[in-house]
Length: 224
Picture 1 (tube, one colour):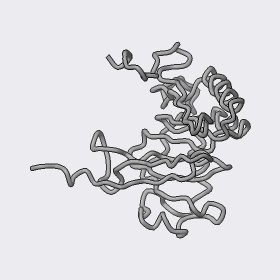
Picture 2: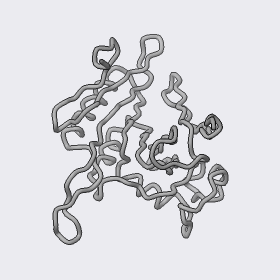
Picture 3: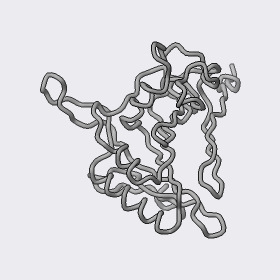
Picture 4: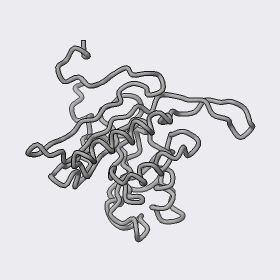
């Protein structure tokens, strides 16, 4: 039923690309000012664990998707687009690096105060302006697959939005890219009332110029 919609872009896609890889070009006066790049991080994939045995871990982007991303970034760049955003479900490995270097040494990110994260209290000097907390680990593939290196090399993507980790909501600018968790919306699965709502992206002629979380406690609408 969904696939018959006039503006439906989601595609099943070949196995090596997965489902739902597509681009939304946002225009102003016929000029592309922002490209939203949706990519499938799959569910779980195999890897070799520390014991040398094959195991299953959280999903990741496949090598074929690296090429797909590169091709689409080049197309957007050729059309004058100077800013793109990747929207994925499971975070890429670089979220680990960002968390490890942005917060001040010795902090337990699982126990930080959400409001205080909007001040400079928790952040190292070069990461001031970051916000949000991580109450759980970065649940991504166990190894760095190098995708973030490609993002930095191409220089088009300034923002990555991930979900998956319901009680993480950090936004950290790492190597020029805002690695962001979209705020958990609704009460499905596990969640925290104080970390619920939605993430707002402000798009202008310069691309995405602002990211903010709008916090909403859904229990306010629960009727007994």
